[in-house]
Amino acid sequence: MNFKNNTILITGGAGGIGLALALRLYKSGNEIIVCGRRLDALQAAQAQMPGLHVYQCDLASTSERIALAVWATEKFPKLNVLVNNAGIQNFVQLDKADNSSEGWAKQREEITINFEAPVHLTTLLLPHLKDQDEAAIINVTSGLAFVPYTAVPVYCATKAALHSFTLSLRHQLRATGVKVLEIVPPAVNTDLGGPSLHTYGVPVNDFANAVVDRLAAGEQEVGFGGSEEMRKFGQPEIEARFKMLNGR
Image: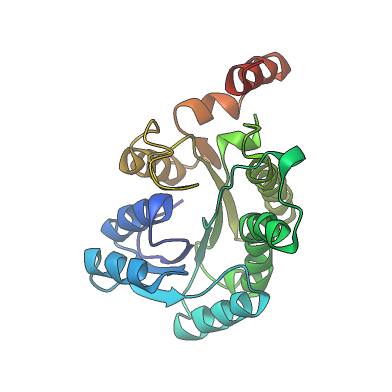
């Protein structure tokens, strides 16, 4: 895929992997739009990239997703790339989970942001993207879509669902001009799940540079480090890695 002279919308683009992708694609000569919940984070991203466009919204809200799609297509008629990156990760012991309405709301939000939102945004923007040159939808999943880490069961399930959705979407759009690509991160040194939880992960900028270069070279699904292994595993390797990740 050509990663120059595009107009790219990145969800969750004010921090972590989203910000690293935004910086990499910005430096390659693309017009970048990022959305996120925190205005201060959006403004900090804007300070790093003069000309960056920002939009504050909560992707857990159906109405705010619709408003984002309307705003993005009206303000940026050449928008041709959607990067579904926004995600949250919660540690939960299911047999000890908070079964109050507040407890379920936290799990439901994880499902909504990680899976419902990218599916909805994709369907909202597809009519527009199908009319654009060099159009693409890029979904950010996880190595844990292939081998789950059971401490974050909802996160793993949502990423597995998004991977499956990506395969189906690619097949359905095979006769159109819209490319469907997938980025499969390993543990990356970001604040996903909370500060200081992924300090053992790979450097985020190294990861972003590597995956963008490979997508530009024509690959459709790319991982990095451990996730590159995991996405290619057969059943014996899946079982072995599952035991390694989860202790037995």
